[in-house]
Structure formats: structure tokens, C-alpha cells
Amino acid sequence: MAAIMIGMIQSTPVSFGAIGTPILIGVSSGLNKAEISTTLNGLGSNWDAYLKIITSEVAIAHGIIGTLIPFLMVVMTTRFFGNKHSWTEGLSIAPFAIFSGLAFTVPYALTGIFLGPEFPSLIGALVGMPIVVIAAKSGFLVPKGHWDFRPKTEWPDEWLSEIEHHVDDLGDKPRMSIVKAWIPCLLVAVLLVLSRTSPQFKAFLVSVALPINNILGEGLNFSFSPLYLPGGILATVAFATFFLHRMKLGQLKVAIKDSSQVMLSAGFVLMFTIPLVRIFVNSGINAAGLTSMPVAMADWIATQVGSIYPLFAATVGALGAFIAGSNTVSNMMLSQFQFGVAEALGASTTMMVALQAVGAAAGNMVAIHNVVAASATVGLLGQEGQTIRRTIIPTLYYCFFAGVIGLIAIYVLQVSDPLLK
Image 1 (cartoon, rainbow, N blue to C red):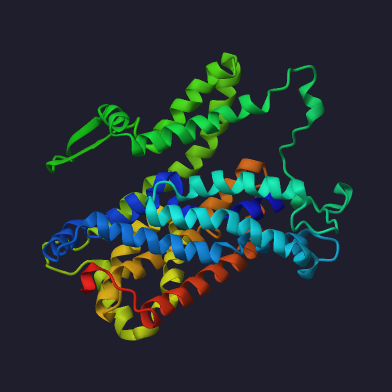
Image 2 (cartoon, helix red, strand yellow):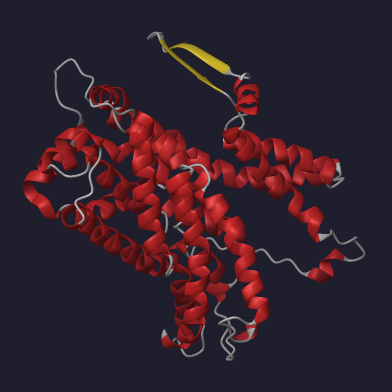
């Protein structure tokens, strides 16, 4: 139960997860890219520069808010899983927890600003992890006191997983070296980086494309490159691991069966949410000449809420993720809506869309689909309500401070973008 709670709270990397998919696919697909690009070209700018501004603002907002997330994880653990049920029991680790947050968010934010949406989460983790490990081993800012869960015999039944693994169960099986265990993870990182930075390697991956022509007889064509997608790279590394770890065919079958069960539970929901989102986004294409749903919603919100709306922009994004179970899908569904509100208010459109992306990441903490998937992974189904009642706390923290940052950025710092010039 504690593992689910802590895992769900880690929303700072989400906006740039899967090599920037929530931005590169979610935001780009959610906005009317063609119309915006035409306007930008007339103003001496372009789509890539516009998306880079959004990426930078998302990275900065996450960097500020996410620094306190490790500390929040600790105090929530002591509050909900300690003998004393105390928030203050975790205060002693505040200096180290904040240091740990900075070890991730500083390289994370800088990467988002200077390199783009593909690598902030990856580089933030690769830089931050060794810094935190070395600091912990050297005792830097580590408190002298000690905290632990109460004895396992006293744990409530709802804390316990249906799946248990014990070291003793390994018997005489040979132990895997740390280097060998890390090779698949490092391979994923290397291939993902090369696929986005090496034009030659990218061209090779993209050359393998699967086209789908004349969809539903409407003349629509679509193609995708499975080797270039993050999922394709993960599958490639998983296949290579079969040989690297000298696995037996039976072990591979068990691994595929276990992972497929989790994948199918997620994929089944997305089979229905993605088409729904596309209908929502493209609703402006109709014979009646009606405005699209996002634009109609934006006009109403701008009229009813007014200039204070940036305070609630992230919460709207979080609501989208709660419904859809995905940061990417929330961005696809609501980016044009946020863009429309910003235009109606005469505010920065990039900042408003950035707040959408940050809020959608926060909404992942309470997305029912995600909580169910996490619970299924650790064998703890049936306790999703308790998890959501806890993760709603950091979700509200994230959305509120994202809204405050948005208000300050728009009305105090008066951040701009190419469309406001």
C-alpha cells in the first residue's frame, strides 16, 4: 500500500515521460497545429519555437513545485503508515529530502529549457540518482534519528499484497550481478537518446513504417514506425534481454504473460478514450458550421471566470487526466480549450497550455485507471479508494501552486509568446 502511494505521487517526470510523448504527441495533437503554424509563420516564428516555449515553461513550473515532492512522500508515509500517525515525525529528514528534490529538478528543468521535451525526466534521474546515493552514503544532511514501519505482524490486511517474493525462494539459483541487471535499463536509455539525437539512426528506425490507407473508405491515410516509438524500443530491448540474461523459453513466456495482463488492462481503456478525444478535438469539422467543443467551452469559461482563470487551469488539466487516465490524452483533449481561454483573456497561450500539461501530470496521481494498474501490479486490488484519498493531497498541492505560478507569470512577470507580439 505504501509503495503504491509513493509511486503514484511521483508526477514531476510525467509531463516528459515516454520521451516527451505528453508534449510532442499530446499537446501537438491537441492544438490546431496547422492554423497556429500559419499564424506563427506570418509573425516571423514557427511551430518548433512555439513548442519549445511551452516545454520550457512546463519544465520550470515542475522544477519549482516538484522540489518538495520527496519531502511530501516522507511525511505522508509517516502519517499514514507510522505508529504515531504523525506528519511531524518526518520533519527531521526535510533538509535531505529537499536536497534530493533539487538533485532531480535542477538538471530536469535545465534539460527542458535547453534540450527539449524528450530528455528532462531521463537526464534528471540519471544525474540526480548518483548524487543522492553518494550523499546518503556519506551521511550528508541525513538525520540521526531512525524511522521504520511497525512490525509486519501488526499490519492491517489492506496493506498486504497478494503477491510475495522471498529471497529464500531463489534456492540455489545463481545471483545476477548488478551490472547485468542494469544492462536492459541502460540499453533503453541509450537507444532512446540515439533515436532522438542521431539523424542516421532515426532515419533507420523510421524507414520501417506500417501504412494504413483509406481508413473507413474516407480517403484518410495513416502510418507509424514501430521501431521508432518508445514502446517499440522497449520491446526490442526486452527481446535482447532474453539473450543477454540467457533466459529459458519458459521464463520468457511467463514474463510476456505477466506483463501482458497489465498492458491489456491499460490498453482496453485507451481503445475507447483515444477515439473519444479525437472526436472532441475535431468536433469543429461539421456540416452545421458549429464551433468545436474546446472553443465553445473556452468562450464560456473566459466569460464566467474571467482573468482569475489561470489559477484553475492546472486543475482543469488534472480533471482531464482523472477522467482519461493519461497525461497525454488530457493534453490532447484540453490543450485547444486552454489555448482558447488564453486568447479570450489576452494572456500568454504558451503559459496556459503549459499549465494544462503540468496539471495533467498531477492528475495522474488520482487517475482511477492508473491506481488500478498500480494496484494490479503489486497484487493489491480492492483498495483503490484508500490510495486515492491519500494521493488527492499532493494532487491539490500541485494544482494550487501551479495555478499560483500561472497567475504570477501572466500578470506579474507578464510572460509573452510569439502570438502576443
